[in-house]
Length: 450
Ligand code: BGC
Image 1 (cartoon, rainbow, N blue to C red):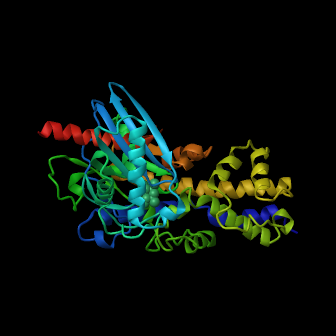
Image 2 (image 1 turned 60 degrees about the horizontal axis):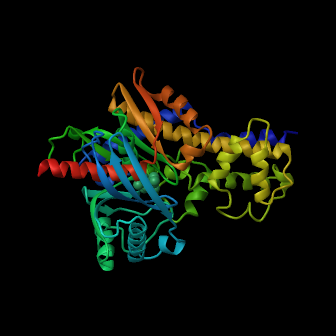
Image 3 (image 1 turned 120 degrees about the horizontal axis):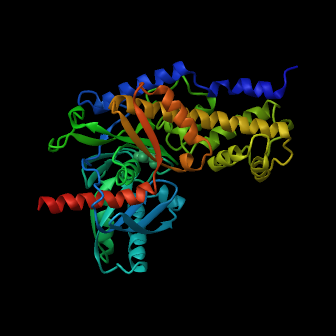
């Protein structure tokens, strides 16, 4: 009789992508990026390639005191940042966004943000000052300028009413005006990928791609203005930053050939079925759930835990993505973290063989995620065709998974056109510092222009 271990390995084959499949994914993504950029195809494109209206990267000479807001991951943060010569200091506070606000009205969301902002200014002694603010808003936004952006869809569990189709900057301005107590100039709205890129570019001028592998997944990159057919600003700058919103890659079925029953289940039980298909195979909001679904299947098949699950194992969302990082952080053959996780899930009856299998499932899911991200980055690198590009990266999955960086380095090296070099650089607080930098660059430009 075949051993449970072998059957599980066989079942997990669907989570592996062959080189041929990865090449096909790259080809499809490349076409989708071109569609997103093109005037004729943009409306039908799944990967929208939004123009960010950021044309100037920081030059390291930006100075001053700025506020920043960072909304779009699991946390919402307010920051105050002082940019000085070769250094910056930054203070920040994390505020919770309660579930009822995430899924309530847009007005309540913006009022909550404005309230946190005012409290933060009081606590930091700048309540009376008039400050510039950069707003990192990490959802698909059709930007109409540096301070105007229309929300296209919510992602990552948000669903506030009355915001899709509206200008988000106006929403925040109105909430600040409703309070009437603080003076804030919103100088820029940006995506977290853009913030990450800007933050890395402050020190590293080769940084031309910003990547997030966190609660969600997305990348931005520097594109030639001539290729951005929808850009209607002044074409005096040769390059533009494009927010690809690649999390939506696959929404038209183009990833179906590698999706599994686990992916389909994650999708149908999500708040946004049929949307953000690539993101649901990669990002922190979903990786743990993918693992859980596989474990449930194998338990029901009698291959794991002696066929005996637990209430928590059978409960959606109970297997956090951080568990995947913890389990894979154990040295091979050691199951200390794995045992802790399984105990938390009420599975203390797991044998060593069960734990090895759980680890194997985690590895398959995270490896596939790293390979998909790598396929995306290699597609961008090949498209940009520059001799050396640094990729600035942030997000909990990249930051905390013990092997994600190495998996990416290996895979991208294999997929990128010979001769092209790349570096993967962890961003130091991309979203926050990046927002302040974008605001600072906007002020720099405004001063130069005046
Ligand atoms: C959003 C992007 C964001 C990414 C990472 C996605 O769900 O659509 O705008 O950059 O998550 O936070």
